[in-house]
Each structure stands twice: as structure tokens, then as C-alpha cells.
Image 1: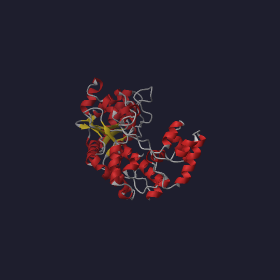
Image 2: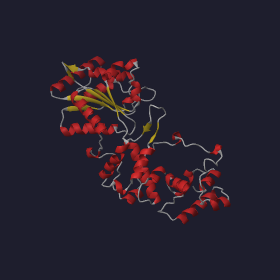
Image 3: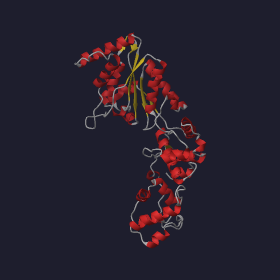
Image 4: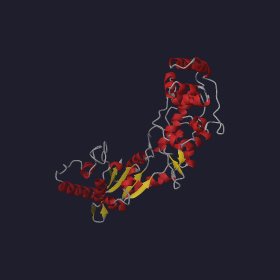
Length: 392
């Protein structure tokens, strides 16, 4: 560690201020302060001069400036003042990073003409594991043959990707299934936070998809009778119908209950509509078996929770993503870097029941990997290693 870190603390200036002054990333400055690792792409003597100017302008004394680039050892546990030693805490280190962007210099350094973690452009860009294939097929069979399915997962787990894949697959196969997707912009579960999605809005979406030329009746009873009739006629013509609702964790309890009523629309023994709701894990609390208000829904709704990518499949996932960008993973990252990502996005659980909490979801992996590549390019490192990942 450089004495520079203590100098900054002494003058009350954060590392981010130094990074902004030097026009470097926070991660690059952290590597410099904590490990004495100078960016290879910059002249170290010139960079030291700019740091001295910064310290002078911030009021550091001459002695501190002169010694700022000396390295100091971290205190040993048996010699340091116990009051100054703090055990590392997982709570202090956030696992997830905000949205990261691949910098132009990074693209050039690694020869990347396409961001490996950018939004998917086609179905072939979608990585699959046995678990994902199971959920994918379950959604498809529900759309084709009926049912009530809730797909639940953390942010960035791939829920929207699975929805897009479902729509694409049905279209590509020419399946006689009409997908109905109500708009959920600004949808919340109460009027205070936003606009709740109600059964009347869902009915309007169904009518717009099944019978777009019909004028929707004004009274609720006439409207739902009209809806039932339109679904019967569409079914007679050979079509199935699937209602797909994203952000379903924002649905009010009343709307969740009404979804069961849509499922009950039938022609003889034929169910006229199936329902797939896609939501973050907050939905599981609403669909708790202890919640008497949604007992009817809980008893009929199959729930699948998207799990994080298993540690042993992380390398497979990264290799696939880079191959889709026409780049070999081995040219960008070594095995130690892969292991460091797995460790960085995992932490001990708070209870004995959860030994490890993993955040190895596609979005979190992509953000961490992008930040690591940006840092490697800043430092002039040819590969993303464990030290680079830990320095982000």
C-alpha cells in the first residue's frame, strides 16, 4: 500500500476526487493506492507529477508529498492497536455493481467489436443450462396447452430473456398461440405509487389481441361477456391464448385473484386462456400460503424460481458469451479470474440454512466482468486475473 492513501485521508480527500482529477477510473486509483500498481498505459513519472499537483492544491504538506509514493506494509494483527484493526465484513463490500459500459479503450485493448454482455440480438445469443432449458420448456408448454405459471427471479436473472424467447419460439414455430401482453409501464400495486393494473385493463388487452376490430362494451358485465364470446370464437378458429404479464410483483392482490377468473373462462372442457406471470422475488411474499386473500391463486399457480448460475458452469457461461462476440475467453481472462468472479459474487449466508448466498446471475456477472476488463485496459494488463477482479 502507498503512503499516498494515508495522505489523502489526512487532507480529507476521497479517492474518487483523485481519480476525477487524474481522469482515471476509481478502480484504477484503488489498485494504485492499495497495491502500488501503476497503469502501464501511462508514464508513471508524469502521473506522479500530476498527483503532487493535486496534493499541493489540496493543502498537503511538503513532507507528506515527498513520501507519498513510498510503500508501507499493513500492520500485523499482533502488533497493531486493536482499536484500529477491523475484521473484514461481507456487509461492507457490495456484491453487485451498477451498470457498467465497455470503454472504447477496452474494446481496442482486447480486440472486441461487440460487447459480450450487451442486449441479446437473436435467440442464438441465449445461453442455456439444464435449469434454464427446464423453465423455457415449462413456459412453452404452458402457452401451448394451458396452465397458470409464475416465473420468479432476482433482477438480472434472465426473466425478460425467457419471455422474449417464448414469443420468438412461438412465432418461429408458427404455433397457433396468441400471446397477450398488457402494458405494465408505471404499474404499481396501489394508487399512491403508480397506476395499478386491473382486470379491466387486462380484458382490454385480450380484446385488442383477439378481436381488434370490435368496440369494447362499456358496462363490466357486457364487456366480460363480449370477451368470453371472442375467446370462444378464436378457439373455434384453432387458436390458443396465453396471457403474459411482466413485473407481476407490482400487481395488486385483487388483480392476482382475478387472474384465476380469467383461467376459468372455458368452452366445455377446453380452457380458453393460460397465464404466465413474470416477477421479482417479492411476488413470493404476496403468494405466501399464509396469505388467506390469495389462497385460491396459490393452489392453482405453479411457481418456478430462477436460480443463480452454478459455480462450475460460470466458465461455460463466460466462454459462450465471448464466443458470441467472436472472441476466445482464454484471450481475455485466465482461470484465476473466473474463480475470483465466483468468489466476489458469493458470500456467507446470514443463517445456517443458507450456507452461501450467490449472485451469479447474468447481469451481475456481465457488470463485474465489464468493470474488470475496463480496469485491465486502464492498467495495461493483457489479461483479466484474480487481482484485477479483486481490484474492481
